[in-house]
Image (cartoon, rainbow, N blue to C red; front, side, top):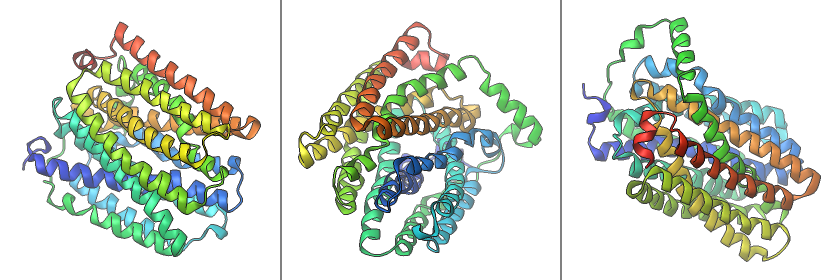
Length: 408
């Protein structure tokens, strides 16, 4: 059998596009489209913030990552999990928003467990099949494909719902997920690693040791710092646009379709930029540039600029925010040990999700108490502080030799 690292470049690219698109599709719907639908249905921001519970499988997936990392084969796991996601989407066609928030949340929670598990396998496969030279442009492809999935999930599906029904929307999601399985069919059934014969208890011990390895938790904390301010702003933009008087179809075009489409440019720009400069320069420049785009939302939150400013802010944040994401994901791959790729990367990605949930909750609390402007201002300040903290810490002491090699 051929190892993942010996796949042709074309096959690697097609796999990355299909697998990350399959992740972005449901994620875009549940994080961007569903909050808009719930807000329109009359739910409060605090009630909508309960959607942060959907992040829980993504935050806790590191608990079962060693099992997925060292049991079975990537091909078998991916076909099984993607098949299950299709079944989950078809099951959701039988539900409606009027069945109650709890029912919808439970169904969506199960869907996200499946998607989070697929993410573990996909990330591990990506780390193993990409060398350090390939990670810059490959992460651009990864983020671009993920954003393309979000275009369908947050934009196209929202428009489909506006013109048809809930059932038709999820049937369309099932069809799209089925298409992403095609490149996986030709993935070699690579042999399991040497630790695949370990018992569940031994795998748990191995996971604890990985988590406590020098630098692991420190780097994860830096990921949290880098993303918290961004999460405070970006994760409440859907309700903000709705409360600004835009209808759901306009929001679908602005945030879901055009916003995510322009982020494809950001993914390409990020892949090119990370490929050409050091990780340090990439994280510093793109992180600060993203914080500057949040100032546009601060201005808009005071009622200045109208719909025109909202369009400008959406495009600017989509392009620059995606370049920052590419830079961070590349650094996360640098920090992952290829022998434990799925486990290590998943730990970092789990912190990435935790910060999204924490940022959403913090921002929603501030918005309900004081309005959008204070929340956006706090988020912008914390975004700048997070970027400077990450750079300052890694300048002084990189958390691993792998990061040190790529940092400057």
